[in-house]
Image (cartoon, rainbow, N blue to C red; front, side, top):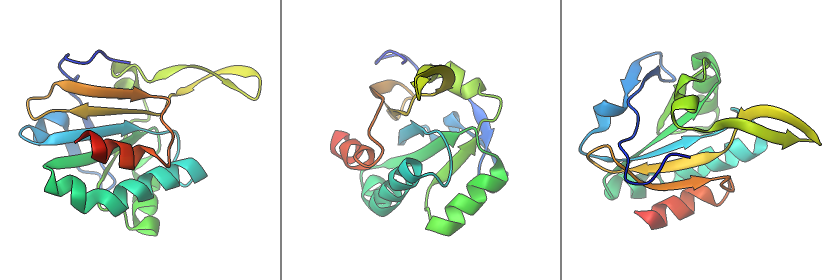
Length: 150
């Protein structure tokens, strides 16, 4: 995980509509940047729907939510439409942003060591500085916890 107080690495990725989005586009707003394994899976759906339900409250507090996974733009679009997600989903199939944010790591999966994303959420302030970082988050609890952090 990246250290609190450091400047969040800049990135540009396509969103669920194929539009290129950069972290710098959100300067002046708080950013909740969360990394998750896969669209349409149980835990990831609970996490995304939780962020979706609370999104008006995040906006009231001056924050945006950005979800990042290795899924394609088309997969993100289906995920957004199926669950009515009101926030931006970013596609990082090459894992460049995952690696920049130190969330692509070895993990145990059914007793086997594999490489994969560690579910991680960063809170980035209006100037682009990391102010909170949470690794191995519980998907269903993460949205409430992040709202509390604001």
